[in-house]
Image (cartoon, rainbow, N blue to C red; front, top):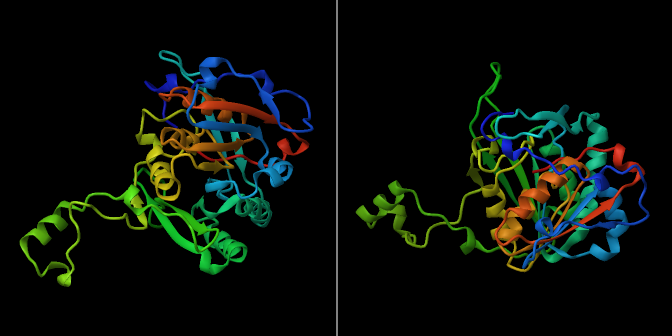
Length: 334
């Protein structure tokens, strides 16, 4: 993980309420100072909680509420991940534990499946689920999602491509993630116009030079095109202005396309593995409300700081739900 000029973004809040040695009978509201709470218009509910326990407690209240649900769980990688804190200009940051992703693979699949069941039930009839994985588990998880939603509800497998160094010398470099997309019903919402992008310059020149290009099909070049199901976007390590010292943080550009395509202003966007809150940051900036959960206090504190930097800053409500399960499962996310 990079160090240097951007370590001033690696700060945390050290909120004692999130580290309390207690068990909560129900989600507990934590008061925030005005500079972190924001004034709206978007609202973000941020929970420091183990997501399965939280979902079990809130199942009836949250059923069918989310228009869009993006989850970025552990990938079954067998690794342990860290975060960097206390960085400032002229002072090197320190590494702390973020989350473990090293349980046995069968246990991992059973652990994730229990959360996917609740994720399905959070979606409203027009809602969409995006599940962000990579080569470790994506093929196994797709089978489980086919069973949960029905194969006919599979919409896309998005391939997120990126560049970067790799120690691999015995195979092709593994430089893409897989995002599985499922809809709750046939009447799902998708705004193609919100995510259109310019055609490649060579495509524009081709159609301008010949009426026969495209076998007689002439696209609306000024309107642009709907993106393909493979997206090249740089990783956060190359986006210094976004980087907050969390190994698995995802770029805002990735979430922006997802949020624009599958939700409208005023809709509720959920993320059960919120990490440092990328989904909530993008949702609030695009006038969506957000429901975020992560069990790692470091990630939650970084999310609060990121949300407070938005202009206008959303109205943030912080919740704590500490349960016995808080020590038994990994957080993840962006």
